[in-house]
Length: 369
Picture 1 (cartoon, rainbow, N blue to C red):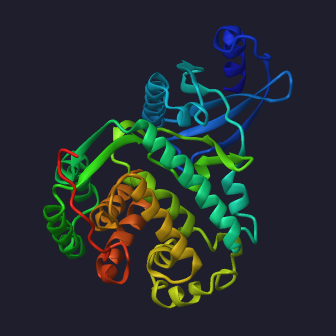
Picture 2: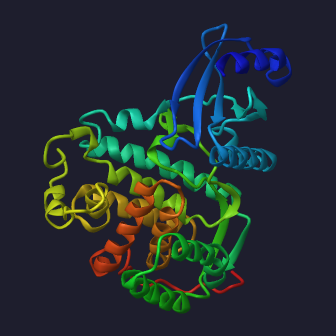
Picture 3: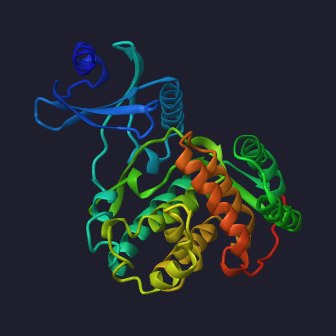
């Protein structure tokens, strides 16, 4: 496969990347967890620098992901928000090579944030963690501001974007007493907030720490756009970064109890380490139900981004449970599907104990604002 890629790209390189050094070396970066998704191959130029990133589909699901990413990248290239053009890879081609569908993009610069994240000591340092959050929030706020396209009433937003999510959740995961109780209350709040204005923006769709690169104090690379869209609701991107950041806090300290620098973690262990719980449940509970500098940082991150969107924190009670249901149906990987479903049910049991549910109501916004 690598030889076929190199041969095809070498033949067309002057057309795809005029004036750039021709490609020479290659390395397999890694493969997606699902055997049906994709592998990533890095191609290097004669100058020794990274020249192209190739994603190779390993089956029908991988092909669908590559087609989706190519469409999103091309679409956003067309409208040209600076925050996107400065940080996202440029799509070069989407073609079958060596009997596999391949997406080829330009590389983006920067150090993967996840590399520092998994370095012992990083997630224990409030200053370093705060820097990660500040950089992610600055990029996302700018991206949402530059791609804002319309405003819709909250009730319309839920009908258009989330009714299909809940239908899929019912069909593929199931619907029990916990979901029924939670979403009865969620839709009561939808009725109360129906005229609140919700901005429509472009969406990345998977804005976790592993998809961000930074350099010299700012985000310089944003990867993996297959879950994105030119126009959608901004909440998945608001919640995904802090959720992913918090759920893995203890991974750099395998084999030991607690997380250095997080005294509130011990209290979360008592109530979020039940037998059979998803291994990410503890980090989730600490992040959104715990106490200490990190849960408070997450709260400021979420409420700050909502404020940038012109929204009150009271909308969390609607959109955060919907976010969990959406995440449960996002990947065809049983661990994540059942894991996020378990988080949704745990949220239903304990909603009264989190600021996400008990936000102070803000002023109503008319449909015409």
